[in-house]
Length: 365
Image (tube, rainbow, N blue to C red; front, side, top):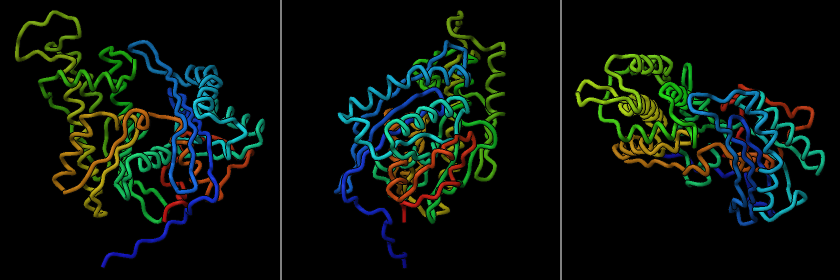
């Protein structure tokens, strides 16, 4: 017999709670204001973001990204508060990304959060970036107890919830899927606007040829560095024709679109495989895709085919919530705050390696 559904430790609040969330773990600076109402509903009051974009062929360095966050912090926060139609005095807490992420940008945003906390005498809540993605994904989609595929520039994990912890079933052994896509976009000189991964997705739609690439799943884990090396090697092949080069009609020609198509198909197949294995293990019929790469329509399509064959469902969000944003930090932080958790000023540090499974998920049964 199935076990009795356990009661949630998170009760409906006796009054409305409002939180400001600040995110800056990579090249997106986000500020969002969220409200938890007395009837248990959640309302996004504002969600403002500004992205640090570098020229084609260049990545974003921690120092330059941190400088971007410092320059834009005041503007983005003021905009978020104004759009939410509140004042800083209305806030119950200020939530910030504690990690994981890039050190210098994380520290810049944490410094802003500490300053606001002292100025307005509001408690601080440090938030795990990955848990922020999961909680916002659950809130927006209504997924109950899904296997989570978390795919972004810095993280690739298959996660399932158990006993107040998001447990990692499988992950990348080297680089993250978003990092793999971004680095290849630089190799073929794709624009970073709006993002390298998005532009690879658009190129892949024009691809017609599937070139052989290593398919590297190791149990529940994946390895992506070898695939990146292999696909980069094709750009030195005599059959390769870069964008804008004369292109004689031949079945032997390899175009950038073909490489983008091949990279996506191979990597996403690996991710679908390990996600399906996790679903089988815990008996789940739901998949929730979160993180920046989760916006990719081809990944959603491939995952949908797998889930449909298992009689399951795929949940995903649009770019407002799957790409790094402040509102996801506000959501996870406010859930934590309502369970009595605060981050003392002396411990309001950052850590580049803050594991998803280190967080006590006190608000779930």
